[in-house]
Length: 224
Image 1 (cartoon, rainbow, N blue to C red):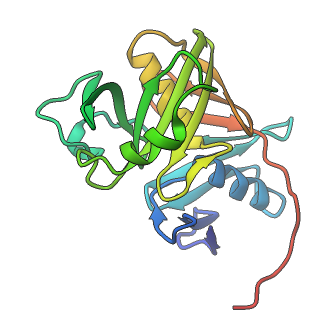
Image 2 (image 1 turned 180 degrees about the horizontal axis):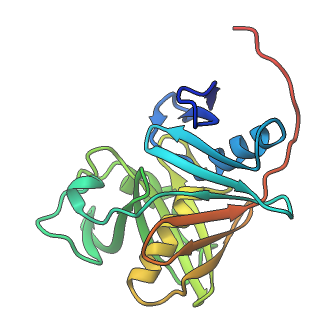
């Protein structure tokens, strides 16, 4: 992730995010929480950051958690982008002769969400890459495997586009929650348990908010 000085007087900074394979992504929920936490000590506890997907408001809470606005989810297929004749709450994807029921949404980047009975048994390693590169996702997709525990809690594993499975994905958490809410299965505020920890996603049919901790691990410099 690159963080640069403010390019507008009212913005604290701008940032760009690159995957392990060198590809640049439009948005990174956990990454922007880390940026906000890093900048909070030398700026205000309420920041506006500029990302390729647009402006992000960030707030450092009294308990040290960071809450960031992830914008409005986009379900219109052409804006995700996803190839479909019409918008629907769920779609059937053909995967080597197997029909999979999925939901799709953009959180500034494209997401495909599957509801599963057991996240530990989900075939993330095989299905993740196949769905990421499915021909109905022109720009690829992040793929989330979600188990709904109850209306206020889900478990989630995410295969990230250009990376593979990761310990946590902020936009993936947001995508899973809004898809579950669209199906009437989840509440307005949901705790999301990922392999790397827990975040909270709030959506009341406006801006999606992502909240979780961000801790400084180390500091250093890079001579390029």
